[in-house]
Length: 280
Image (cartoon, rainbow, N blue to C red; front, side, top):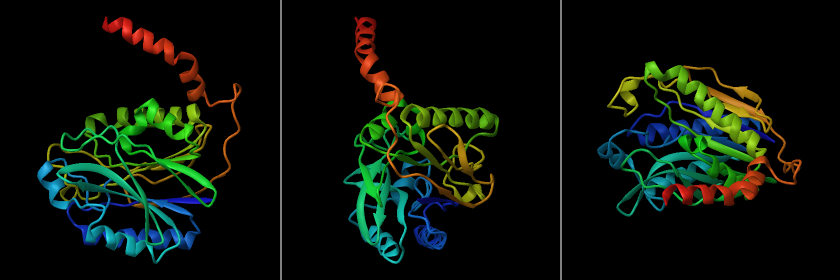
């Protein structure tokens, strides 16, 4: 099975422009024969760092804007995973929508959202497409053990992780190293493919980031269950990634479970006990 990622630049608050780029990416995925294509975190709305800008561009799952997104997918074969600032009542969520052929298959909301105006998601759905079971995490979610473990225990063979990175110059190398280490661990622990589906920032004025200067350097990749990078993007420019993966479920490890699942089964009660003794 072929999977793809569009390392494109999102323009904050420019839904029409981002929607055109979304269709461009779907067309490229179709031409390449990809079954699934991802786009960066909050791609449809941009990912501003202020609540005012986030609310100005946000929309609901049942809104006319979402219908326009679904209309675009109806003209293409590839299943799409694309992010947006979701308005849910009076709350805002950092959400990725999973859609195919005009149908909304579901959503996932970031579980480790660090913007104060975003609520935390606590649902971890999985989907199946052409025999491939997969789940979605968003950016920082991949830095924690449990979200990936939950998806793997539900049978996910691939974890797609849309990102939006805009990193201070002084922290660029340390960020690069930490992210690679996190994703290698998640792939190995859970015997899954891990897709870092990052953005790129070409014009900081269009990014919606107001609080610091930085770099949106890209570095998207598809990592296999052994922690090896199969394909990766060029940095500091837009790019299109295509990888061929094996959709069949992983064989059980030495104990009949992934490392992460076995570790939780064996040591979870001890962790609970240690936590309890520390708080007493």
